[in-house]
Image (cartoon, one colour):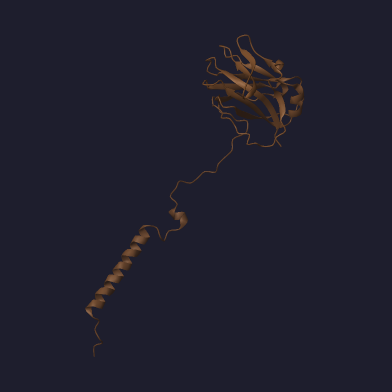
Length: 217
């Protein structure tokens, strides 16, 4: 004897349900629901970041002012406007102590030849820095409405130099820092930091409030 026959409605519903499940599985597979996180990551492989050597400065690059970050440091004074005798300006350059609401500063202006104004770094200061990693800080601003680009060179005698640094300087008083790793030698004389107030030789000036240095722990 034949068993009971399923109603046509039940058969239709069963087929419809199976079709819906099949379609759902197909779209799930296409959209990556069943893929692992690694399979879903289609971004190009990332390279491991590297750090350039501290003393590396690409030729012609203009450095940005570094933020001292209010880090507690033991600063050694290199220059302040109260002692302008430590400054040497060539005949076609100018250096004048001035004062306004921001405090005292030395306004320097390089000559048309691009000659720089030199600031003495005492032999005693260099003796403290020998064999150390040091950070120099130039606190400066441009004349109002005359943003400029300065260049900085150093001559530390037996202790080497700092390479050429370039900074874009605006009217807001700011700190311009650079690092130097000194060899462990005894300096035979004082050194100098030379600043060209206008790398583009357009006669722009820059105000120097202070130059100081600290030893990096």
